[in-house]
Length: 430
Image (spheres, one colour):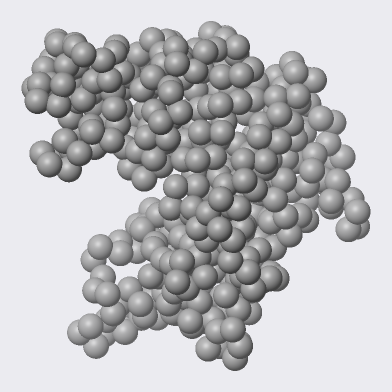
């Protein structure tokens, strides 16, 4: 197994490609083609600032592979955006789309900027400028961007509007992640969490666990983590710990995430409302009581059946992997486990449902949005969830079967299955 270069995400991505290629005996010509994106676009984006001066921002779009369909992937506004980052992210998006077998390719974009330093007008001019530099290379039949870090449905709306002005016709499918009234999809707001819930269900069945007795700890109480906690609680799972950036709460009796969130909203931090009779909504969370305060680091090391990292990347590392007591991990965040930690978890026998599968509900419903747009349709929330469940469950079973076939972990199995699918389509198109 190759070593990873932690300072270069694209080298890490290529190591994952090489490892999967060796296991599946990937055709050497296909392997060579997959070592680089098909197109890498660098943009100089001049923006008139509010004070009248021109400032030039640097933007990128990496279009990695479109063997399965139009390139698909978000656009991020961040001061640390780099060429290697967008190349790696576009590769991983290719893998994610192929893992769940949706007809989209891998793409990713970004602009080097701190959006918090821009006024709304400057942000709009930057967003429209990005599209003016890119419009010939995007479209519902070419490349379909979406929101990512520090980009919003409003920004997507500006981009779509600018694109349609330039091409001279409507193309609602050019951008996903839009507001519903602008052509967005039902269920998009919680689709990442819902997809993760389907993965938890399937994992529970494979492990032979009883739902009511299955304990879950969730690190991260943002959109994805909070929705997942609430849905799992409603389905009967025992949520014993949740956390946000300020810390977390833990109770062996179980926590009601809706009421914990209410306390957070009322008091500025997560509170604890236990499902059992040991504590109640009025009880002060203590350091050593039945419902106690814990740090994010402590949550990761709790003795639970399922650990769900749903916040930041690289939280499970070589330093703490040996202390992980969870029987399984479902990665709702992107890249929460470092490659070194992965090796430790394998040795410990921890089953990891990887991010390219576990959090693919988001990109799947983004694909649904595109599909509805190009067909001129609007599906009900129930239609979306029914379609999402089938795609996610089928993908889980395919990855599990690949894991069993090659006697490998689920992350490697997902890469093998995805690259196998991409390679087959590439051969047909050659």
